[in-house]
Image: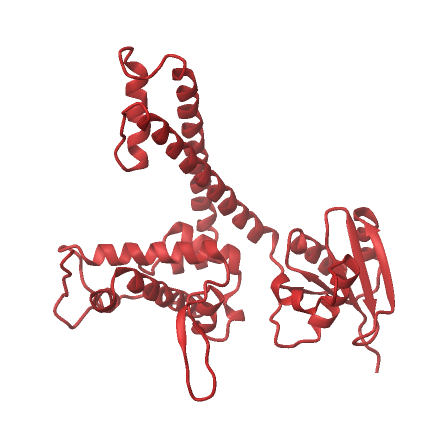
Length: 353
C-alpha cells in the first residue's frame, strides 16, 4: 500500500525550508528554495500532503498548493512550537511540522478563500485606522490640557473644540502651535473618512453574504461582528458544538483540575482577540439597553440583568458574550434567524451605585 508523501514547509518572505517525508518520523529530503523556486516546486511536485503554519502568507500558499492538487494542512504556530527540538532553526521548524502533523488532537486551520481574506483585510485596516485616530485624538487632548483647555470626554467633542480655538485669534493657543494642530485635525478627518468608506464597503459585502443577515438577528451582533465572524471563522460547521465555538473564541473558563477536584477560573482569552472584543462590546450594549425603562424585556436580557444583579456588570457582560457566541453558532449552523422569546418574569431594574 503506497503512502502519500508529506511536505513540510517553513514559510518566510524569501527563503523557504522544505522537508519531505515518505514515512512518519523520517525526513527523506530537504530543500531550501527562493520564492520563485518554491512556486515551481509546488507546481511540479506530484500531489502530496503539504503542511505549513497558519502564519503570514500561509493561506496564500495553501490556495496555491490546493490549485495544484495538494492536500493542505495548516497548523497553528503555538501548537507546532512544542515540537521544535533544541535550537530554533528553519530545519528544526520544518521537522517540527512533520511531528505535529502526527498528532491527531491538533485541529487544522481551514485555508481562507480570497473573499474571506478580503473581508478580514477590511477589518484589519479599519482596526488600524481606528487605533491611529484614537491616538491622534488623545494626543491633541493631552497637548491642549497643558494650555488649560480641557475637552469633554468623547471623540465627537475634539474636532469642534479645536476648530473653535483655531478660529479665535485671541485664544490661548500659541501661534507656533496652530499650524500643527490644524494638520492634526486634517489627519483625524481623513482617518474618519477612511473608516466611513470601509464601513460602506462592509455594508455592500454583507448583502452578498446570507450568513451575515442571519447573524445580525442576534441582539448585540451588528454589521462589524457579523462580517468579522464570517471572514475570520469561515464555516461554523467545523465546530461540533456551540461550546467548542465559544472555547475557540476564548470565552470559556480556564480549567485547572486534578483528581476529583475541579477548578474553573476566568475566561481563557485564547483565540482571536478582535472577535472576542466585538462580542464583548455587543454584550455590553445589550446590557445597557436592557437597563433602560423603555426596553422591551425578553428572556436573554432578563437573564443578563439577573446575572449582573448577582455578580456585577463586567462578569455579566462576559457571560453574555459567551452566550452570544453560542447563539451565533446555533443560528449560523442551522441557518435560522434568532427569535427573542418574551420574558415571563417581572422586569428587573438595577439601581446604579
